Image 1 (cartoon, rainbow, N blue to C red):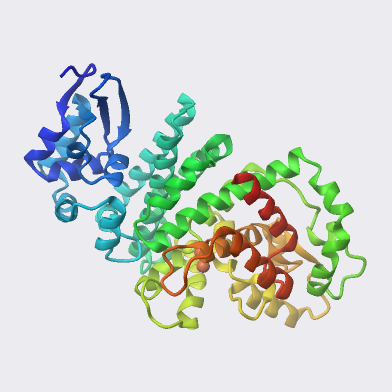
Image 2 (tube, rainbow, N blue to C red; image 1 turned 90 degrees about the vertical axis):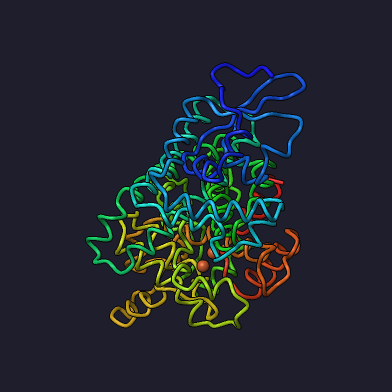
Length: 470
Ligand SMILES: [Fe+2]
Ligand SMILES: [Fe+2]
């Protein structure tokens, strides 16, 4: 068999020697050169992506042969020779199990799931903080390469996007667990590099989504690449939230949506009047403090970081969230406070991200909702009984901390995506997943018309977004 230039190591021969090579390939994030047996054409794919789709892909596909470049082989050899023995060992066990089971990646993932973050968790939890930071950085570099190359293989990009987002969630979770009991200063010091890598990663994945990637391939990859329900939920909410925010910006910047809303405001007025009974002559400008507007880049990135880590507080009680245990409101409510406090006090994440974690179940103060904003508002009204929020939604953190508005813009966007995902999530153990149209109809009826929990204008925009994205 002829091989492409420099690809000198036949993967199936290498991996037959020892299972630790499999782990080393994953840990080093090497690429596999796939050579088509029929025409000898070749393309490069990340090992991890191939492995996630088929745990023994190098054996099962008789239409292609797989190679490592010599450079990658050296990295793998070095890693497998014991430098990171404890990590390799834990992954080897997992890979052995997967090989025995001989199932698809999804089935194997479900069977081996040991916690709500899935089988990849041990792998990442065993890393040092520095390793986790560079792991995310490598994912970011891969996305940057796609941007620079204007990569046209949408399947490849979609899979890399989903996998790297899952990795970012896992790394953040593992670090949070490590720093939880440290002093705030030590925790910030220890998480510093990871936070920087995550924020950089978010910028690159935002750019990819903005450019072209929100498509069928991405949705397909989001559906099939699941390692655990919380992880899958956070990954989907991050990507869908990012895509929705970007759709919002496009609508505001390129269509006359604001004018149209002003003209049709009458139909929305009763919804807002109910929330702001003390405000007279409601207009669009009284709904959106400072007027409805596009989101500047800095805020955009800060907020999507918040989307990425919005449920990170579930880490503290992951067994409950992933079990069949009866509904326990106390534990459920706790996740927003845990997430808010951890992000705010133990990390240098943008302030907006902590608010998103702490306020994403407020639902305009509905009694079924919860979060730290309602306590802030209550306190505020006690000391300033005459000063009631005069607006529904603010874009500015300062205007939120002075309680001038009922809700923070990115939170109202996230709530919609979050509820939609919860209703359509096939992995929720306590409820059957709804079809997209059923979920949207239920949200409109229950969470907009009957109980004003989700914002009506943003919900209408979400309907449009879903129509256009599908
Ligand atoms: Fe949540
Ligand atoms: Fe959530």
